Image (cartoon, rainbow, N blue to C red; front, top):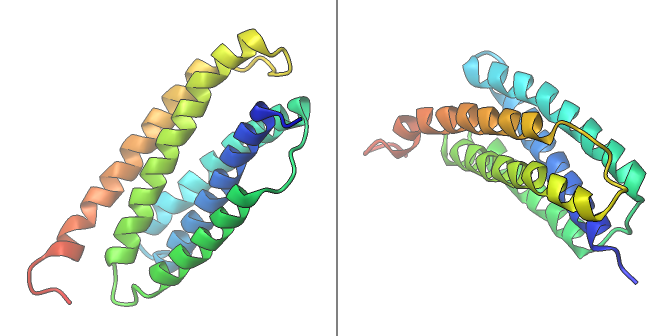
Length: 161
């Protein structure tokens, strides 16, 4: 019998690994400007969130590799390819990478909001300040969305190739 909680947690962990890969790519590609510095800071925060999620998974138990993780891996490779094609500065690949990150952060927020309710039903969930984690996710979303919107004029300016 499968365990929905294990699958749910592992799906979020796979998403966080995807975010780490995107942020590493952004950090390397833009290491000389504000976007690279932003990615470096976010990498540290994502690592902290991953550690908490891994601790929760350790308490709940492992899940088997499934199709969702494989699809996530393929999506990661495709997005990195597209991001690396932005050789003339911030381009569509960078814009879309930031957009994917904002969506992932919203998913992380949903996780931090759901876990207190799940904890009332399943005592395997350790006690964390999920409210504080949700606030950090909101802040991460705001900062990532600001970066995304900063690339609009570079990507969608008429006449840009």
